[in-house]
Length: 428
Image (cartoon, rainbow, N blue to C red):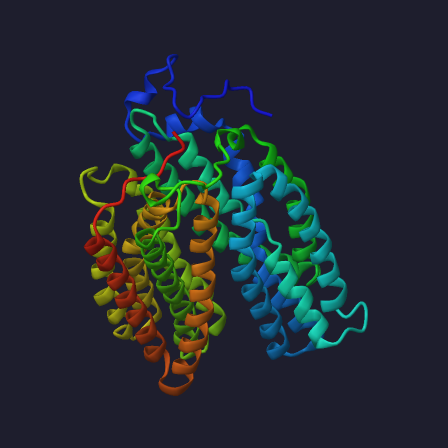
């Protein structure tokens, strides 16, 4: 698929001086090949379209936002449960063996969701919910598994740590872009053509691009390790590692809660000005600075301990989230949301990095997908709590939920720092 010669995980390039540039994006191009980047970007786009696409399809077909919300919630629950199972299977069997069949199954399930959800066949609401749940559970986890590849590609390289941080910064930025681009694409296609088209496109993209991602040569860098050792070897789920992984997941739940509550608060705030439809655009301001700040992590001081960076950025985030209750105009709110996004990108990069450090050997895919699921669960929590608070006390109540989640995020980071450093597990 790619013309560049593969670079083994433990070897440095001898044909270019780019490896002397710590964490440069040029070295990532050498490691993965140019084709990897657009392939991994578009292969993960269907995940960003699935929830809002289901909401749009079912709401339009039934005329009930409640029915659409239930179906969209089923997608989220399915994704939160299915993602770690996909990650675990990929750890045991290899990404290619898991991603190819799951992509085809997912495409078929989404087709069934279109048929039932659009009312093409008279289907009870429970059937639609089951199809939505299954679609979420079978959605290929390209983003987390791409991170696993980067962790393997950069292992044992002279400047692999800096390259890994650059790669994870890039991955977080791409995630932000897809979760802005996905809903926008759903809105355009659904309004201009038909409500079923976004899901149909997502199914086609999944069936075509996820298998291509699965067979891409970067997957060869991952060695399947059978965890047989004990805690000392870093291969087992020792108590210390369980606690640390749990703190990472808790941090991502806090992050997702911030996303969900700020999103709900932005819609409520814009609605107070009679422009509820602009809430999504307000929320996009947070994603913009978050994506840019995530990219900047690759040039941050190398000596700053990861848990300290996590806790420090979260500590900055707490007052910024509280200040979201201050704006009295749309323009001021945009400015404050831009500020809130600044520490979020670096926190996400850091948690994924720490998660890779504390994951037991041979369980990297499991942990990465658990972190992604944490964001999904947190987003649902944030949407629910902030929606209630916005209904009772207005948008300020929704932003109070975001501030509380920022506190949880800080406490998780502080707890990780207090536990001390864990050496990154490697496959040799």
